[in-house]
Length: 358
Image (cartoon, rainbow, N blue to C red; front, side, top):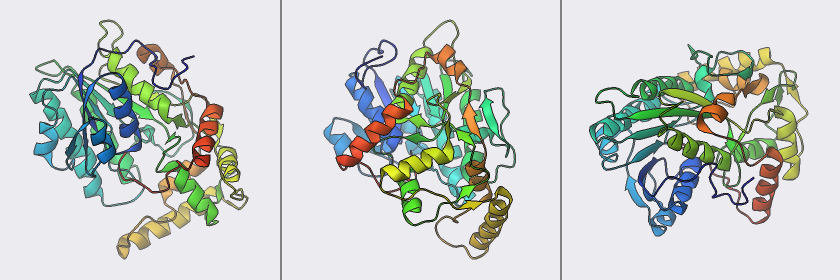
């Protein structure tokens, strides 16, 4: 096993010009730093000022993905584009998700085509196959979900299809691949861990369903590895992953509520003991969704149908395809990841502010 987080699972590609969209996000920022360590010339695209990345030598473009012309132009002269940017969340205007995730992704695809970029690695989500059922060991043969009651994954379905359809399309220079990492976490995580801790501290968490559902999580350094493995694999003549999507995880499904309670207790927060049936959670979700819609309330409802299902059902995946085709192997175990998270906490490096892009 490598001894350094910066070591790749495969020999690194030679220095190259790379665009990372969503460079201000958790994944995009980590990926940007790893690419710099490889000697790449990195351009970052995001909306918020990033003086730390600028100081590292990253050329920053402050662009909104809904600006089709600017997003397209950012792809000029690149050897690889990593499109990690997205508007994420469980609630919001579908038009906003469409602008960022569908139109924005199409603009990146157009830029790759027009400026003859050879490779596009796209960050998708396992939620594109959401079907309101238990997903236990599901693989890439599972079809896209339909009527997904959440605008984020619904928009990612359209975007992922567009990315995969763009593979080898005329003029035929562009190779594309989509990755579906599940629940990215680790030191610096602005979303999953802070959200669990905040709601747990306020006593707002409830075990939904019987509490024995298993889920996959993905440690941040492993997800960065997966993106670099995918980029390298697109250069292969045989068994090329182009035009395909791959689930990515730690390959260690956990009991969701045991993991949440371990996380809470490690941060001095009482574990969750109160329970709610899935049927009740779904009814509450429908009511709150209607209230938020009718009164146009700001923020997210405390419960939605999508969240209720995610909290109660299995969501873990067979990643044998990623191992076979990408050469991906999770280097940092769940146990080691938690140790690193707690060490970062002791150093004061755990973030507690949400982000709408990853």
